[in-house]
Amino acid sequence: MSQPPQGVNFLAAALGKCPVCGKGKLYKSYLKIAEACDRCGTHFKAAATGDGPVVFVILIAGCIACAGLFYSFIALDWPVPRLLIVWPTVAVIISLILMPMLKGLMVASQLRHKVRD
Ligand SMILES: [Zn+2]
Image 1 (cartoon, rainbow, N blue to C red):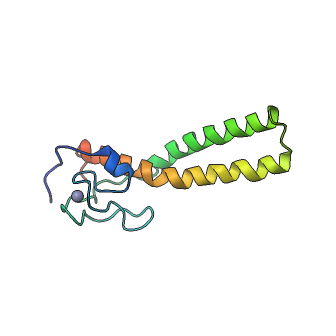
Image 2 (image 1 turned 120 degrees about the vertical axis):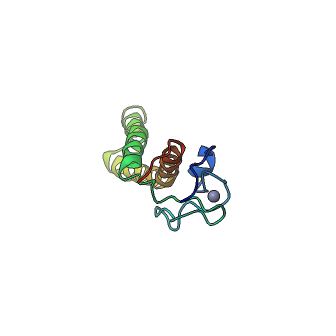
């Protein structure tokens, strides 16, 4: 087991890099956290984020999509079929972009606060 990290780089974690060294990979696939950093050996096993990032993704993507939907319906007078195609698609794209970023931030936060399994 590695020592608890002293400094945690939240920006690196949001970009999918190791929150400790900032160089190794945090993910082994799109949302699958690696067992350990391939550069510094920090174990990510204890950092189980569960559904935590999903809550924030839903809040952020939902607020953006709902605001855009109401604006384009009221101010731009878009037809309903266009609204039903554009804004759910925007919400899905925002979610796919935000999910690994927020999951990385949550892993970094757990490492920062020395969560153990
Ligand atoms: Zn590392």
